[in-house]
Length: 113
Length: 107
Image (cartoon, rainbow over all chains, first blue to last red; front, side):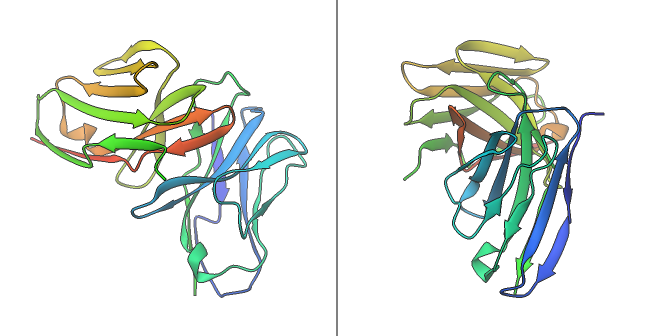
């Protein structure tokens, strides 16, 4: 079954404590991306990756890092989380530049206190 | 700045009604996607359009590139169509999203 898996699904953490949200896809997709969703602001793109070792900034990259060492994995790293990073996060993947369908993970609810 | 504008923000319909959701965008695009977000939060991709019209079951999506406008139509709406519908435009590898249309279909 085609799947994008995110972990953790729910997390409450404290300001400044580094955390990583993992994302893995089983479809051999080149393109992967991270988004955050906030009330009144909708979805916004954080970072994306076109392939292994190729990443680029989206609309709201500040405070986040990513890496793409393997094709299937695209972790999102919050080096020093702050309360304004409390949000619902989605990872997604797509087949290269021609993929019609975007596959989303189930979302990760992150609260920073 | 809002690269993508959707209307209406909220929509209540009776079962069986024909529904239209509109999306206007201001950036140059490679393609436009329509997404459905279920009440539980999961997001499903419905359509990708770069021109013309696509149909899948009771859902129809159209795009007018010259007018920078797309519409999502639902024929014979059903309570299970209740969800948030999101328009997303892709400028090469960057995505910009509308704020979503919350649809509630009453039996």
